[in-house]
Amino acid sequence: MKGVAKAALLSAILLSPAYAIELIKLDEKGYGIDFGIQYRVMYNNSNIGSNNQYDFFRQRLRLNFDVKTEKGVGGFFQIEYRGGWGGASPDASDPRGAYAVSAFNRLQARGIRYGYLYFPAGPGTVLAGILPANDQVDQMLFSADWDLNVGGIAYAGKVGDFDYRLAYVRLVEGAFYRNTPGIKDKDQHFLVLDLNSKLGGLDAGIHYYGTYGKICDPNSTNYPNNCTPANFITLNQTWVGPTLTFKLDPITLHGVVLVNSGKIANTSNSGWLARLEGSTKLGPATFSLLGVYSSGKNNGNGFQTVHGLLGTGGYWAYTYIFTPHGPSDVNDFGLEPGNQGFGLTTVQAKVDFPIMEGLSVQGVVGTFRSNKDMGGAGKSLGTEAGVTFTAKMGKHMNLEFGGAVAGLGNAGRAVYNGGAKKSVNEIFARLQLEF
Image (cartoon, rainbow, N blue to C red):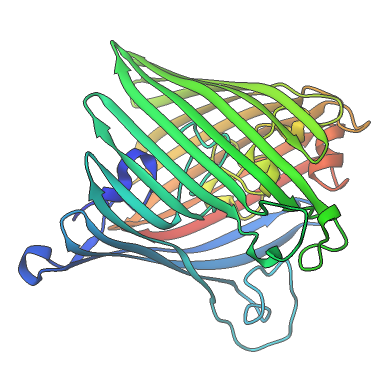
């Protein structure tokens, strides 16, 4: 087995399956092809966003290909198909969004989820195309794992003890409005700069992310194809901060601090975020504790995230209902660390325990509170507890199953559960083959 797209793994640009099958050996044919797969069937039963209990199945297939012409030179692409069980799937991949009486299913062709070319240049590697770029601040801002895959060019590598990553991303292409007068730059640009090194016993990093430009206001009645100059608004955001990791056996401490400032239309925003996580081993079990604080404002113009701006998500937390969680992440509240600019305080705990060979369990608890009143709904978001079992079914195949319950406060119910019940539950299962 070999690592997938090794050059692309630099500086966490790509988080791919841990293994791949070498279909064609580079040294024998003059070109090489590695193949990987992620294939899953999921079941979900909950009352999230509803006063009624409901359930559904979904299925997803991802195929990875890394085509190399020589060492460090090639192209990587991932193909995705997905759909739900039931008659609606020929027309919609999510059975919650469509209904049909039909006798056949199929997985919908989502297309090339991401694909890029890569080659060495000096001490680093250049990657150009649709990049699955995670932030390097624990997915607090944006996540390719969840689904932020964006077109751009990146340069990543290592010089001495320093790892670096630079990237330019075209977040919004404005060429459609090239003949619209009065707006010089209609593109939305996104910049990335990460620098990491070791400082004594510390792993330290400094990170800059920024997006700048003008976009057609998605809330305008003229959006997306009939926007006038008056419909274009400013979207400028900057995030800067350090990361630190300290290991003192058996305890590991990891922290992130971010400062954010920007402007959306004519309204300025500013805020800061701190994330502290500790973990330790106690016998065969691993215990983890997470705390996150982001500052908020009464008008929602506190700390912002790319998640909040674009409606994406990320695996930044432990919980299953409030935040995305792998085996159940098709159904959750999608709470992001900025809490829509009202700020967030959350404390979460997790324990991972191997029960026996081929079977392990994870338990999580968490509490969430808004730092500012959310439009008259108050500050109380709620609490959650959940458990996930992981059973090895065979080589590269696992079955994950479990459940979670959440008790919502007034703000959690009004803002994140559509005013439905305060008592929320979820049962989930995922059978997955991945290599």
